Amino acid sequence: MPLPLENRVALVTGASRGIGRAIALELAKRGAHVIALARTQGALEEIDDELRAHGQEATLVPCDLKDFDALDRLGLAIHERWKKLDIFVANAGVLGPVSPLAHIDPPAWDNVFAVNVTANWRLVRSLDSLLRASDAGRAVFVTSGVASKAETYSYLGAYAASKAALDILARTWAAESAETSTLRVMIANPGVLRTNMRAALMPGEDPMSVRAPGEFAPKVADMCAPDWTATGKYYDFKTDSVRAFRGPA
Ligand code: NAP
Image (cartoon, rainbow, N blue to C red):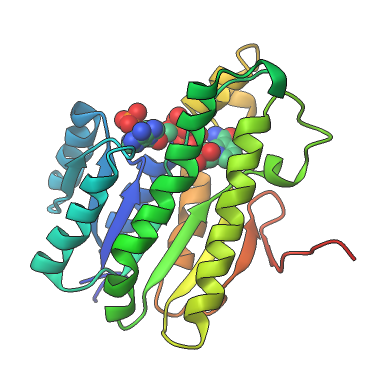
């Protein structure tokens, strides 16, 4: 029996650890060929080893997302090899400074926006035609609840603003593609998951008190399937629900 994502090509950013690693493994488990992008080559090779043990292989892209020209080259390389891309999971992200806005150093601010926002726009630009060339292109952007909760999360201003920008980027792309292609674009909020980023933010927290990335990954994989229909919507893992964005009344 064919696997549900067989013959589908999936790019996952931030695949070296945490949520992206879990998503990459889940997509591969469902039959997709995974293009795994992150800076840490050794960690990407470990994913490849794990997949090879199950008779699969990944394409590894050791790359810094701030190398924007490399993201253009990645689109060209995908075009040359597959002529299409079926799945794009924009997962990589950085937390950045945990600090009052007025105390953030400009380079630290720029780094957060380069990785969390501009790199994703550059990937949209590089991958748009490839995803439209798929019979059922799917994109999932990993956001954060802090994007809409400034009052609860002081001192995460750079991160929160970048994720709010990412949300509107994804929603705009969804609106631009909804009528003219089969591309579907989702925004997914993992809530609190046991990763390095969470540990950096909450060093005193018992890691075992929060859920593992492997629990969230199947939900993202569902949104990557050809039978997924929603676009421009927000998936919330905590409530396991899909909802529309609500603006001010
Ligand atoms: P993580 O463990 O810190 O992993 C971040 C991933 O992003 C790593 O694979 C890292 O790979 C990659 N990355 C960071 N900077 C990069 C760069 N310049 N170029 C290429 N890759 C880069 O964090 P995580 O918790 O899994 O976070 C994944 C996503 O979930 C992020 O977008 C985060 O904002 C979001 N999120 C997480 C939580 C949570 O509770 N964990 C909650 C809400 C949202 P390399 O270091 O190898 O490059």
